[in-house]
Image 1 (cartoon, rainbow, N blue to C red):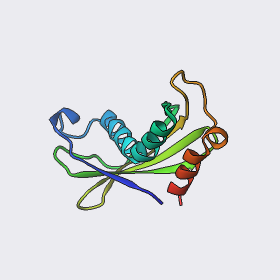
Image 2 (tube, helix red, strand yellow; image 1 turned 120 degrees about the vertical axis):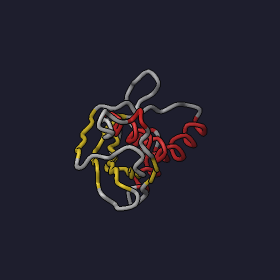
Image 3 (tube, one colour; image 1 turned 60 degrees about the vertical axis):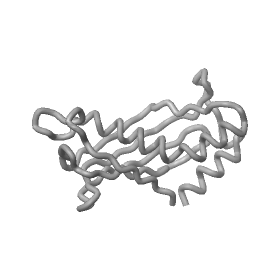
Image 4 (cartoon, rainbow, N blue to C red; image 1 turned 180 degrees about the horizontal axis):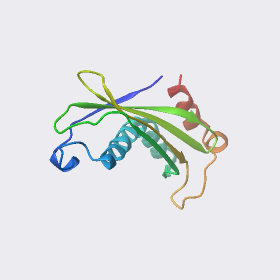
Length: 138
């Protein structure tokens, strides 16, 4: 299974008055992890076919376990949770790099669309990309 690990460190702008990471910041870090995970397979395929494939978000679930703090070294772990013909779901875990303490877990769900937001059945019309993503889950 392919798991992307992206390191982040909260700066002052990422925190509230208590120097605890603001809850919305985690969503940005989840997007960063997802972008890094899909960068190579998706961008290479787009270049090959000369068409962009978008992943607009349709669902977000986030569970706050423990607060992360200013300057704490964190790792955002991202993997593909499920892949259907026209939707993909990602799973996230944000942990302390040194202790492994879990701060946040979550998932996001995305349809695969063209740039006009029309759904794409990649299993049927973009099998090479679909197969690449399925292999990432094994």
